[in-house]
Length: 89
Image: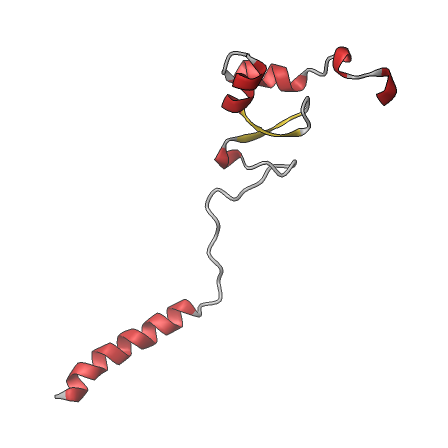
């Protein structure tokens, strides 16, 4: 009687052990980084103006621009000469 009860339990334990040791690491969901190291899946994009990864909605609020893809893209692509001081040249 004990063998009938233990056999399925041991079989299950063995299968769980084999599966856990398969050696293939799980792929991280949303872990793809762009060329600048930004995580687009988390809402980050590279902003040339600020030289950091930004979240578009946070950037739009901080820069007081409309939160549209076109506005954020235009804001990040423009480098105003006013932002660059003579010391940086």
